[in-house]
Each structure stands twice: as C-alpha cells, then as structure tokens.
Length: 97
Length: 376
Image 1 (cartoon, chains in turn purple, cyan):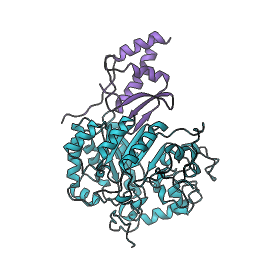
Image 2: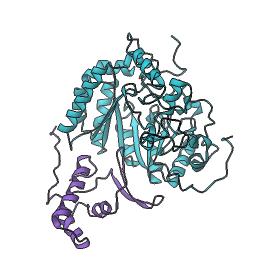
Image 3: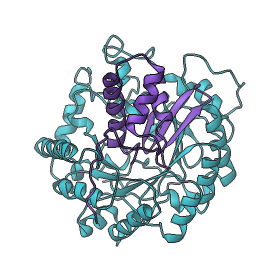
Image 4: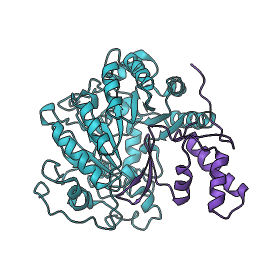
C-alpha cells in the first residue's frame, strides 16, 4: 500500500471538492454549508467565494487572481489567507487534489 | 401530554433548527460490547418503527433544517430496509452517515448502499489484537470481518472513519490502532475513552484506566496528530471521571441533535431515556417540528435559563452548557444539578468517589444482552 502523504497547497495546486463532501445552499438557514464526514462547516461570505472557485480546474493562483479583481487588497495578503484556508481544508480531507 | 398532537407553531426565532438526526434504527446487534451506549432496557424488534415511519421522519427532518443523518443502533445494517432508508434520506437532501460494526457488510449490500447515495461510513474496532477484539465484542471472527468491511468501504470509494473505544483492556495497543487506521485508508480516527453510561456503568471496574495510562494515551494521540497531519484526523475524547470541566454533552440539550429510538421516541440524546419524569414525544403521534420547538421535554434544559449555580453565572455556560444531564441524574438523582464532571460542581465529591470505585479490583465483563444486566 502506498504511504499516504500530506497534500501541500501551492500556487499551482488544483483542488476539488470530493464527491462525499457537499457544498450547498441551505434554504432553512439561508446560507451556504459544507457537509463532510462527521463535520459541518458554515463558511463566511469570503470562504464561500473561494469555495465556489474550487472546481478541479482553478489553481490557487487562479483563485487569487479572480479575488484580486473583486477585492482591493494586496496579492500577497489574499494569497496568504486563501492558502491558509485551503491547506486547512485539505488537511482535514474536505478538499482533495 | 406530549403524545397528543400539538398545534404546529412557527419556529421561535431564538431556537436554531437542529443540525443532525441520530436514527437508532434498531437495538439488535450481533456484537455484545460491554460498553455499549444503548440503554440497559433494549427495544425489542417487534417495537421498531416501520420503513414508512422512518421515511416520514427523514422527510420531516430535512424540512426542519436537519443537514445530517447518522444511521445508528444497535447495528443499523441489521434492518432489512437499510438500503431503502439510506436512499430516501439521500433523496430528501440529508448527508448520510452509517455507524456500523461492519460484520454484516458484504459486497452486495455495500454496492447497494453506495448506489443509494451513502456519503460516509464510521466503522468500529474493538482492538488490534484479533483474539482480544473478538472477546471484547463477544463475537467470534468479528475482527476479521471488520478488516474485510474496511476494504469493501474503501473499494467502494467511500470515506472511512474508524471508531476505537479505548479502555483498560486495549489501551496498550493505541499506537497499533492508529497505524491500523492509516493502513486501512481511513481519513479520520475517533479515539474515544469509554464514558460510563448504559452498559459501561456495570462494567466500570473492568474498563476504567488509571490516570497514568490516560496521560500516556493523550501523549500518543498528540504525537500522532502532529506526525499524521493531512493524512489522518484524530478526534479524542477523555473520560469525564478525569475531567476538570464537563463536556458540552450533545453540544447542549436540544441545541443541535434529535435522537430517535428504535421504537420512535424522540430524545435530545441517546441516553436520555434513563431520565425519569419525562413524557418523551413519540414521532408516531407528534411531528418532528413540534418535538423540536414545542415539546416540554426538549425545552426543559434548553439554553441557560434552567441552570443552577455555579453554572448560571459561569463564563463557560454557553461553552459546556452545564455538562451532561444524564450524568447529573446518575450521580445526584436530580438531572437539573451541575454535572459533577465539573470541578466547580457542589456534587464533585460524588464523582471523586465513583473514580475511586472504578479503580477498584477488576471485574468480569457483563455483556450486552436483551433483557438487561443481571444483578450481581
């Protein structure tokens, strides 16, 4: 069996939401939710924007570029925040490569 | 009387909708674990809800705002309609989690469950030593079947959580349990020290670890968490008897969960049926909405208004929600007292005495069985 390894999220890393994780709008609470094994996340507005770009096509760099166009912040700043979020979700298996 | 239909009220703004439904489909189980969290008085098969009744519960749950359903038991796959129930829950939009011993899984029902839309499986292990695992489970070849089940689950492409209940008779093999989780391709591992409810209570002296053993286990878990970051997530539950602050039992009474017993009683947690003086609503006669928002049972210990001191003025009152009502009752005879698992509880000496007793000479296992625990 191949040894499982930690996925390190870098600029060129392309992530996706695996089939067993559900990212959907909840009509009762009127907000987006992430449903994962034994885990429930209520992402804030910025996290929702980021997760909507996690589609198995956009790399971390692509996502940062897209957010640059929307928010007036330094690229480095956005990159640091987005990478931290995606790395944390990848560490918990909520996102995969 | 809560069994009578009540008028459907709009959701009060201050009560959030439930997040999850624990569906205890049956109390039947091929295993006989002496720490089973089921009540000593098990529901018999003839009292179980029908397929249609369960489906209605899942539809009502989704409409109420429930996001996840945990199929539990007993052994949920002992229900012949398990595939139909999973399919219905998935259809109405619930995230579906199967909590299983795995001993009844085979290629056929695994494929059917996957096709039905099952999202995740939590599989229990009793030990890594096969002979000891089978002795704890009270079932021959259980361990071997569980290893096969883990492979079936992973081959089906489903994410896997291993649930390892740890105690005096398997704690030495915690490092091997962590390695087993990695080797089986699990994404998560729950290392749960036994909590002393249900069947674990009469087995306290057979199960309770020393403080030194608990500390060693905690160190092992912390080291493994660092080493396996991004590979395996480890959840860790320490026994209340060594706690300084109580656990936020169920995240607070009727704040997140609805538990439905095999016979259809709606409870704020799976152990609550042990509390006397409650008229638990039945989902046969009460809608889930009225259970959640309107029933006296769910409202009794909800929030903070019911709390005695020292909880009422404690800055942690909305962190641990006063601890566990069942434990408060078990130790003090009054479910509205502060959980003695809190070091600030006036009844703390009772917990200290229970801990001392649990560390007494070891006893033989009392195995789980229909008909309750025999008197000693």
